[in-house]
Image (cartoon, rainbow, N blue to C red; front, side):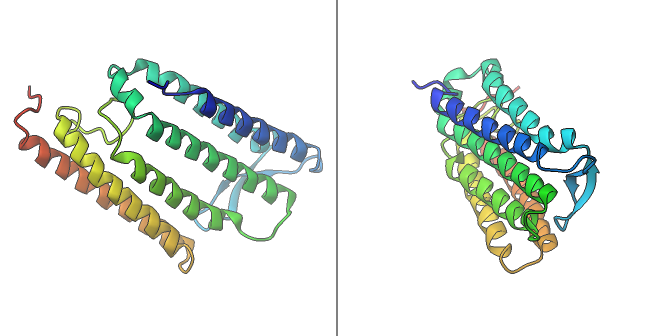
Length: 226
C-alpha cells in the first residue's frame, strides 16, 4: 500500500514552494522602495487592498508552506487509516490542485505589482482555476473511502458505508458539473455572474448531497445507529 503523502508529491511541493519563493525574491529586487503590493482583490478581480512588499510578496508562499505541512501531518490523526490510504490518489490530486491555485494566484500578484501586463489576470485565472479544481475533485470523489478528514462528511455518510459510497458518486458528478459550468461561462459572462453561478451551484450541490446522504442512510439496514 502506497503512503498517503508519497515522495513524489513531496518533491512536487518542494519545487512549487521554491519557485514561489524565487519569484518573490526576484520581484523584491525589481520594485522601487515604498511600492505597495496588492494583497486583496474585489469581485471584479481588481486590487482593492495593498500592503508592504514583505507581506504582499511572501504571504502566499508562507500560506502554501503551512498548507503542505498541514496536509502532510493531519492524516496521521485519522482513525480509519486504511480507508484514507485507499483514497490516496484523490488526496494527492487535491493537494496538487491547491498548490497550483496558490502558485497561480501568487504569480498574478507579482505580475500586478510589477505592472508587467494590463490584462486582468485574476478575472481570467480565478474561474478557470476553481472550475478545474472541482473537475479534478469530482473525478476522484467516487473513489474516496470513508474517513473523517477528507470527502463529503455528513452524520449519515460517516455512519453508513452505503451512504458514503452513493453520496460520493453523486457528489462527484455534481462537482464536475459545477466545475464545467464555471469554466464554460467564464468565456462569455462577466466574472460577477460567473461567481454567482459558482456559489449558487455549490449551494444547490451541498443541499442535494445532504438530503441524499440522509435518504440512503435511512434505508440502509447496516447503518450504525445510536
